[in-house]
Length: 240
Image: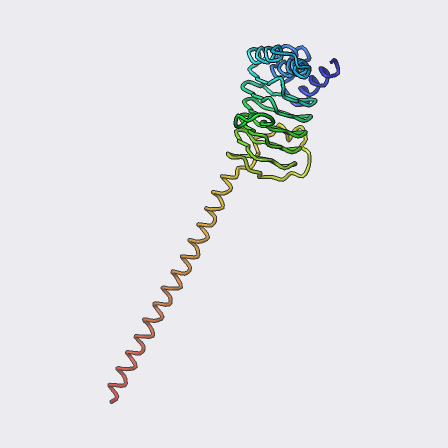
């Protein structure tokens, strides 16, 4: 238990530059409180204790603003930054060293029984307000941009942004702690698509202008040839 607490506290110091002291973490970090309460509720849930795990979950929600179903499986060194509005469903599975920002949802789709929530691999970062929905798998070392909606499997070592979420970067390596916290430089696929369209339009306009000039030059040449033919005809008539 003490080892788990030490790991959680060290994780907060590693991933949150605002953390100043252990006392501050114990008293002022709702993500820390929610995770500790969940681990206790999950232990009771696995032992099939009725009702009490859900009561602990609802108490945690009321105190922290973070709702984690006691059935969710969460790995080591899990950190929820700020945390307000985070929702984690019953059959969610989360690997080690995962970071969630405020407003993130790991939710289900449909009303079927069984696995209906996502599975996150190790070293995943889910940005603020992102929604990961359904029984999908998010591979290791994935970074999901703020506000994205992910409804399909995501391969490892990639960055996902947009609605619906699209893979825009294949990183091929694990993110450093600094890269995990850097959300201001994620690619914008819509802006890139608009830029490509703009470049293409300018290219086509240039080609149209060149063709127009060629057509005008050709027309002038035809007029010149016709004038020369008429002059030659007049000269022949004059000689006759």
